[in-house]
Structure formats: structure tokens, C-alpha cells
Length: 286
Image 1 (cartoon, rainbow, N blue to C red):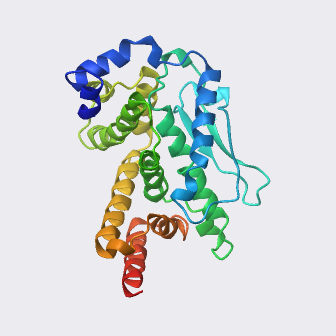
Image 2: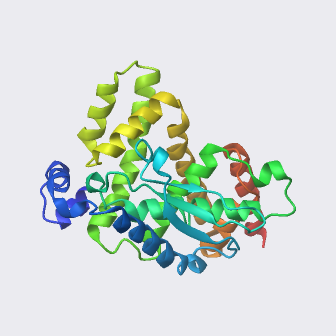
Image 3: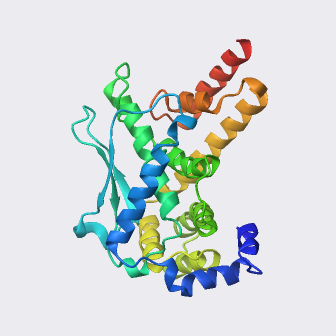
């Protein structure tokens, strides 16, 4: 984050964050603008997927406005599964409430998280595996599902996305957002932090917009442990990828690695680790 700040001409993160918080151009003008950005980023990434995966889902992805009844207290965007038979596409639900206070910087990263190569790709592939029993096709192990989606945000950078340095800073802000969760969730449920302490911690280390900070803090209070799973799952996938790269050397194929990680639906992390280890050993012998 500091490297990006220096590149943009700021002396430290605090001065860049303050600039972002006070500069109107970094905030949305309308709900339609947000909807258009999520749509554009999703469509652009769809063209890059063959560089990252050997197997892609048949299910289509659409971007729609989030239901107004829940948008006031909801996240910037979320994902709803499509139908397993293909009759209903997967959906990125874009929060259009109070757009003038919603930052644009992290829209690109969230589009990749909720859509492709994140939730839509992973969950759709799992639904389309006829040899798996239903409980595995629709499994929702949070560390795997959300860990994959957080890992997927980085994949955009690996195929040349995040051309705008402010958008890349937004990606890094998303990483910080998920790291802060490790502190805040533990703070409130183990250390008995107040809600005010949680909000202050967010503002100390990010330029996140106020609607997002407030909804996130309430979420951690109401849903203990859920937010921890994102970072733990992402770190496990990154660790497995590095193990495979080191052990396989020139035999390592990123597309094959991703196909292996997603090829059995969502799994508990210990089972994922065992599966990837077996795959590495098989590739070493080939």
C-alpha cells in the first residue's frame, strides 16, 4: 500500500487515505454508475478466465440492483447462486443505497470477489459436478468459499487488471479490510471491545467509506467468527499454491492448480490440503 502511495505522490498512507476520504471524485455519483462499473469489470474479467482455468462453468452471470429492503444495512455487493439446471443465472447484487458516500476504489476487486473468478465461478462449477452428491455440490464451508473469493481478487492483477493505481490501492484496501477483521472480531468477542473501538480501528488503518464501516462492524457483532474465515481460507490457498510451485518447478501449471482446488466442490481446509498434497505427489511422478 505504501508503494502505491509513494507512486501517487503521497509521503505516507495517512495522507493518501485522507485525500481519498475528502476527494469527491473517488465516490459514486449514482446507483446506475455503480451498477455499470460492476457490469464492466465482470465482463472484462470473463475474457481473461481461460488464462487462469482449464474448466469454466456453463452458468451465466448477471449484475442487478440489490433489493431495496435490505440495502441500507448491507455490504457494497454480494452474490446469489444461480439454479443448478441453468434456468436462473448467478447474480451480483449491487448496493445502490446512498451512492454518494460509497467509494469507487474497491469496486473492481469486489466485482472479482463476488463474480468471476470468485463466487460465481467456484459455486457454479460445484453445482455442475454430476458425480458429487447434492450436499457436496451445494456445500458452503465458509473458509473455502470466502477464502477462494478473497484469493480471486488477486487473480485480476495477475492477468493485467487494476490498470488504475487507485483501483489497485482499493484491492489492497480490501486485503487490509479482511486483515482488520481478524483483530476486530477477536476484539469484540474475546477482548470485549466496544462498538466505538471497532469503528475507530477501521478508520485508523483504512480509507473505507462510512456506510461500509458501519455495516461491517454490526456484522461482526452479530455473526461471530464468520469474518475470520475469509483470511484463513485465502492464506491456506496461497500456501498450497506456493508449495505446489516449489515442488513441481517447471511442471507447475497455474490453470491445473486452480482446476484441482475447485474440482471437488467446497471442502474443509484440512481436506483441501490433503487433496492438493496428493495431486502434487502425482504430478511429481509424471
